[in-house]
Length: 94
Image 1 (cartoon, rainbow, N blue to C red):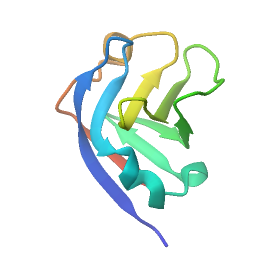
Image 2 (cartoon, rainbow, N blue to C red):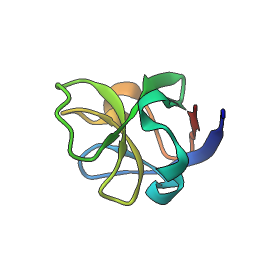
Image 3 (cartoon, rainbow, N blue to C red):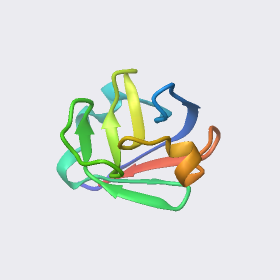
């Protein structure tokens, strides 16, 4: 069954992650292996746990330690590198 969850980026964390208003609890119904996350023209596949082993400069979605879906550019500041700012839409689809 296909689905969609939409939200917004609400802040940039001290680590440089874009934090959304989509609570991790809402993502429990999402098949994380086949999910796509779209934000500000950027798309990533899968939703990873906060503790992951992905290489530097990988654009990815996380079930963040903040308790919310986060977008990250591993090892860098997503806002500075990709221009993602608070207020932009984020969509999870499967």
